[in-house]
Image 1 (cartoon, rainbow, N blue to C red):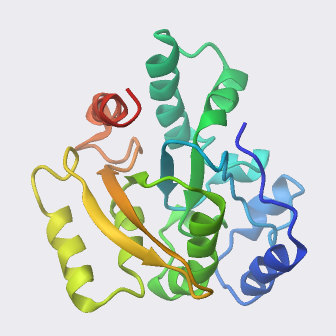
Image 2: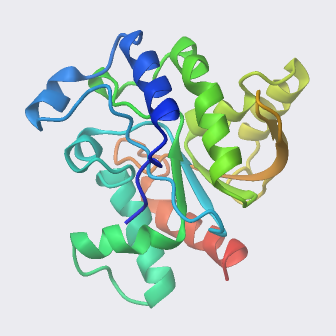
Amino acid sequence: MPKPLPVDPSLRQAFRELAVETEGIDEAVYEAFDKDPLEPIIGLGPADAPLAFFGRDPGREEVRHGEPFIGGGGQLVRRALYRHVHGDEMPDFEASRAIGDGFFWINTVPYKPLGNRAWSMAVKRRFHPLMRQLLLDHWQGRDIITLGREAFLWFGLEQPRDVRQQLEAFWRRDDRFTAHFELELAAEEGGQRTFHLHPLPHPSPRNLTWFKRFPELLEARLQQLVG
């Protein structure tokens, strides 16, 4: 399964302090599973993973298991990964956890929001420096599959206006799920890297327009990026 957040007391404490100030964490779900609502749910993975998956935020099952991308939408991603790697259907839940070992996993905000609504821009900005630091410091790759509009446009936070406009324009393109967008990301503490963003629709059954096509779109990305 993806490796948990590295044991870094200062970084962990920074997330917890931001969470204390954040209204809208779904505390009832954390309580139902006897989980700490201040504990960030971050998957990460191997530093040399060839590909990262960037999603919106954890859901109910992510809280239950303390892992990202493990609920309904995440299972859709993991089934496609399993088929791509093994050429067969994924047999069970444990296989879905294991297939993530070779990839890097990260979200815009590492806490479940009330009602599974997207976090506000203010909350995303609050966590942006820490999430950006994790991406730059804990992963060496460049190719990122973003899942949904919220995840893709996260990369425009703290960017110049022209870059934000370019991201918005790219998302309106008909070929957005086959083309890629290059963007430079810099950390406040120094260090920067150019990433290749490969957007896909959000893998949710409520996304009626794209849900049925998601597996084939992801498979096309995997063929292009990992062979």
